[in-house]
Length: 168
Image (tube, rainbow, N blue to C red; front, side, top):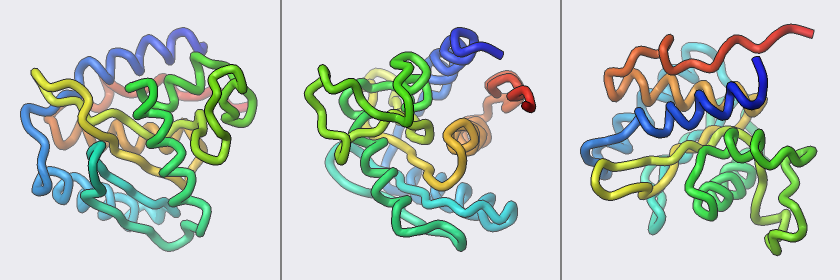
């Protein structure tokens, strides 16, 4: 596993996991599925699904904390700025601790380069919002979102998954 191979795989995920349509009903269905998985796997996460103009679904699970909604907001802002998965951004920009390069002119209290926000891309419309998970290590936050999107869109999870991280 290398950053370059992960970046290529995430770009493939972004090109593949595209909705034909996305609305409040889709957001609720997807959010509910994510919540059920989080409950069954005891994941201490918050789930935030939003379009650029408004929130559509939010849930905070047991074990999540008061920082998670703020992390989700900052991840959303980064995705909105670059229209890419925030895990891909974290790998591409190579900044320690998710800090955005000061030369970008973006405040750290409003932007973070940490995995867990994935673009909602609609065919013939482009990116319209994001699905954000916060509470796990960034690679795992990203994987939870990708798994849910694969299940929802009927795409093989194994083909879209990042390679297993090597244990240290």
